[in-house]
Amino acid sequence: MGTDSGNGTDEGSVAVTDVATTTEVDVELGKDSGESDDYLIEEGEIAGDYLEQLLDVLDFDGDIDLDVEGDRAIVSIDGGKDLSKLVGRKGEVLDALQELTRLAVQQSTGERSRLMLDVAGWRAGRRAELTTLGRDAAQRVLESGEREALNPMTPFERKIVHDAVAGIDGVSSESEGAEPSRRVVVVRQ
Image 1 (cartoon, rainbow, N blue to C red):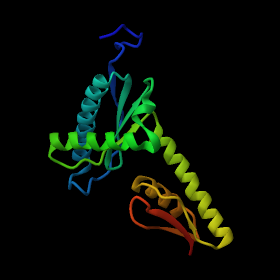
Image 2 (cartoon, helix red, strand yellow; image 1 turned 90 degrees about the vertical axis):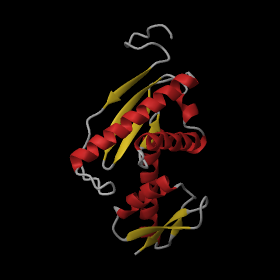
Image 3 (tube, rainbow, N blue to C red; image 1 turned 30 degrees about the vertical axis):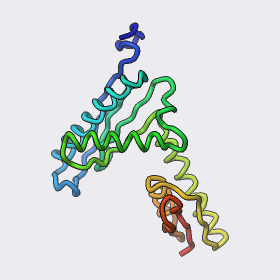
């Protein structure tokens, strides 16, 4: 396919790495923790194979890492050039790739997948930004006593902000509006 890049893989190839998993009970699937981990690892491997083929077709380089966090498989693609093209504006391409990957897993397993896909650390970085945004909004509401409505966000983004606000005493948050203009509102308790 290409020349050896010095890391044991050919250019244009994808390395797949399994990462240690955590153990929790998967209530949704009704499986104990051992079965749950095995199922989520299988889900991650199916997703990794699908993404590896997709990257080959698109001629992108990248390493695929698999992990289990809580009750979902986490698949990340890192290390390649131009991976930001797979993220798109505000993560729109990433969201679409995640849905396609979930559908590929569902077709293989017969079960709806909740796996999370990250490319080039974009979701991890966005999570940190949104956590800071939620905490800062909560502090402003505590000081002013006035409610604060944030900009519209995706469900993924709103959950992160809600979790950040929940960690601060004296304030709470709720979502209001309809998609795609649904937003988090932070209020004093």
